[in-house]
Image 1 (tube, rainbow, N blue to C red):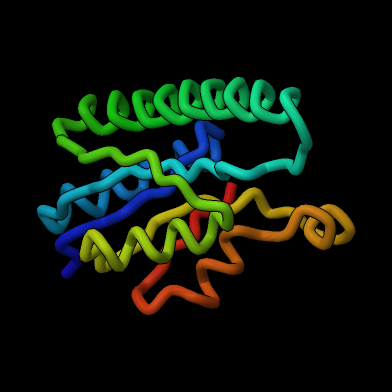
Image 2 (cartoon, rainbow, N blue to C red; image 1 turned 120 degrees about the vertical axis):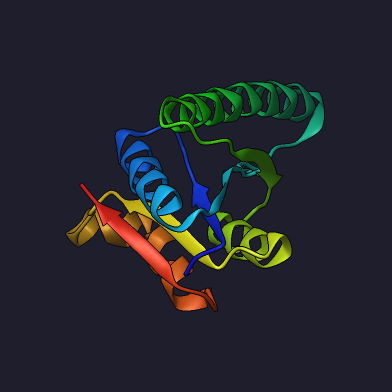
Length: 145
């Protein structure tokens, strides 16, 4: 039914729950799994030399965090006997990075977690999951915790 499942992860328990659900689906359908982590390369606007140093430090920390999240996902899948591909994606808008990557790699299902924010928190922080649901042209399984 699903040949290639993509799971965006950020290292949170919610995203690890999505990895677990994707694992069960992959075992049931014999699917490939690709784990991705999207890094926003332009999280702030700055000027002068301080900006360059701050940007480099941010990118180094973000890449370290992305690799740690992916390693955690890989380990969880390996414990189930599954192999996965991993990618760190550069994207200024996270949901676009997720949707564009799903299309580029030929994924036929996106499995992702939702933090379940509501009210003012959702208004201020937005919802990556909601935007993926709106923009994706393939099924999206939302795992709520």
